[in-house]
Image (tube, rainbow, N blue to C red; front, side, top):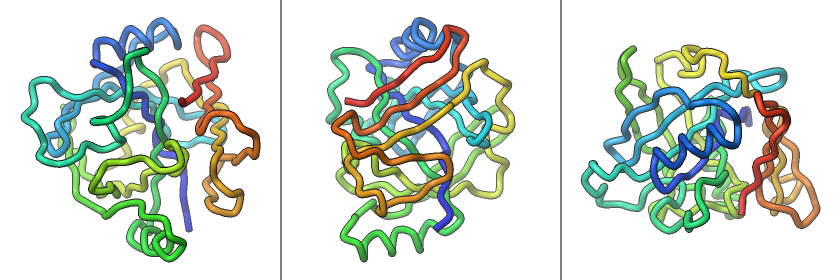
Length: 213
């Protein structure tokens, strides 16, 4: 199975909160994003690609207060997550060129990572389209360590159009997964009792560690 990190997910009480967090924590202002009509969410994005992590970005996502209720559970557990302490790392998304096969293989292992649905987002450069696996209850698995799987459509990967941000992903470590459960380029699995996800970033403020939980 060919998996590669696609993006990290920072959940925020609001996009304004997410921007303030990004400026204070990482030392940059995030780039523009857009709205997700299917899920009633919106985001801000910026590239964090670097050596060992090609075409990777960071997404700050929040419930869109101007969007109608989606009529289903939102992705990334956003309907249930506690953000009273402010924005935080909650999850990561992996891209694959064999989305349906990967979901079938995982179900055979007893892992229900959801079903593939079509999603879109309009940008000044045109519409982005992708397929993404979302559980009907929106719940994250293994505290967010088990990734959401996606496959981009025919449009170029959005990170190709993002300018260098000054932030680069240096490492991504997962926990609460057996070592043999998942292999993805550049991602490691640790055995200790730390948070489900730990991301090490080089930033204008120096090295920064983001932890889930």
